[in-house]
Image 1 (cartoon, rainbow, N blue to C red):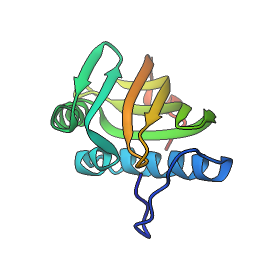
Image 2 (cartoon, rainbow, N blue to C red):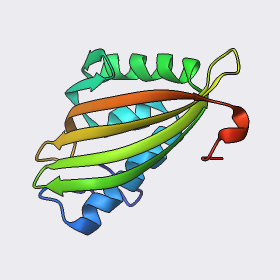
Image 3 (cartoon, helix red, strand yellow):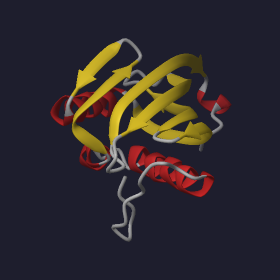
Image 4 (cartoon, one colour):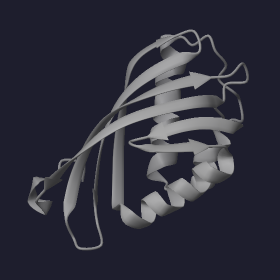
Length: 140
C-alpha cells in the first residue's frame, strides 16, 4: 500500500507497519475516492463486501461509486485486530445516512490478504447496519 512518501509497505508486517496500513486505509476510505482505494489493490483483487462479490479494480471502483452515492456523509474508523505475515484483520465502524435522512451506525470486520508488493489481493468484509437517530451519532 503506498504512503505519502511513495514508500511501499511490504509484508511480512510488523506492528508498526500494520498500524500504518490501517491508518492509510482509513484515510483512503474517508476521502471517498475510489481511485485511491483501488490504488491499494491488485488489478485482479477479489472482494466480498456484505453479500456482494467484486472482482478486479474496475468492479471495485464502480462498487465504491455506487456505495458512496447511497451512503451519504460516510465517516469510518478502523482498528487493527491482528496480523500475521501478509494477512491482516481489521475491525471498523462507520456512520452514514441514506437519501431519506435515516442514519446508520455500521459495524464490521475486514480480512485482508496482501501480495508480495504490498497490494491487497483479497478482501472479505462482514458488516451489520444499525439504524440510529442523528442525535445518536458517535463519529462526528
